Length: 118
Image (cartoon, rainbow, N blue to C red):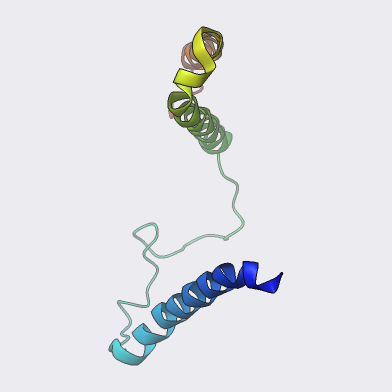
């Protein structure tokens, strides 16, 4: 019974060893020469000047949520395209209805100005 899991355990062991090696080797080989410029804040291009808990504009969250929604919807297209031969015309037209609803939603968001940043 345990011999059936041996390939999985070997795979996990090799993956763990490679992952650990890729985490440890850079600390041993890479030179470490920190200076004030390397340690400065670089995410936004300038040093922080206000409270870190300042409020973000709602449009930032709206655009990010819309991006996630459309990104996930596109993820449904890959398995559909692979299984298109097996699902036939019903599967094809089901996806066309799905894409039609998605397109109508996108047009609605565009007309309402949800994608505008100003």
